[in-house]
Amino acid sequence: MKKTLALLAFAIISIGSISAQSMQDVVYLKNGSIIRGMVIEIVSDGNVKVQTADGCVFVYPMTDVQKIQKKQNQALPRYNKYPYHPYSSKECHDELYGWGNAPRFRGFVELNNTFGTSASWRNRFGMLASFGYQVFPYLYVGAGTGFDYWTDYSYWSVPIFAHLRTEVHKAYRRNVSPFIDTKIGYNFVNWQGLYFTPSVGCHFYVGHSNIGLSAYIGFAIQRIDYDSCRDLRIGASLDF
Image (cartoon, rainbow, N blue to C red):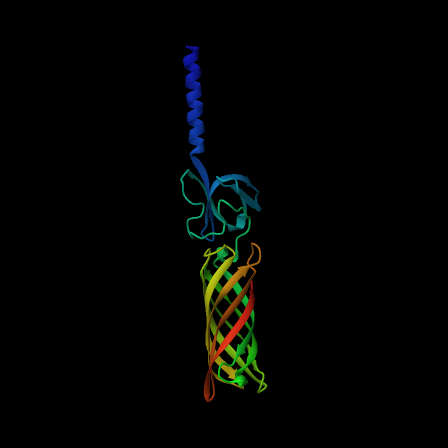
């Protein structure tokens, strides 16, 4: 009898343990990310700590948390909104890369140099600034302005443009993103006319943050009064 009771007690404890192991905490963030694991600490008006099945501990501000639920354990990715979220079972970070924080405000400050492909008088250097919104991890939409200084003529042109950029994440590493960039608008001051600069390049995040560096090569297609310029442009930018 005692042996039977002991076995029964052991079975009840085992079933309870298995049931507990089959449940997990699911943390829903306001940016759409979903983290599955075990909440190990919640600080009121502070942070929530979540430990995932691989032992990684992630810390999120409570202001970024939409809700926390207890659900049946599932063999699903910890993040199921975007398949290319920066966290993986091999890396434990508390911060997101900038693209993982979308949607968010984003800004660019750029330096560039343009080489006249058919005439040296088209050589020019410039500085641009663009501000807008990282609508999705792979799409930025913004607008900007800046200047080009035409060295042979000592002329200036000031473009006002719309700015679109699409980025490919995790093609190589999480902090390296190839991109296609387009700026289209109109030039003012000494040279006036269409402003169009398509380019391709690569973006590098500085650590696990919103700050990054870009390098690119492309074309500067500009209408300048009586002529059209289709020249080679290289540039670099800082974004945040």
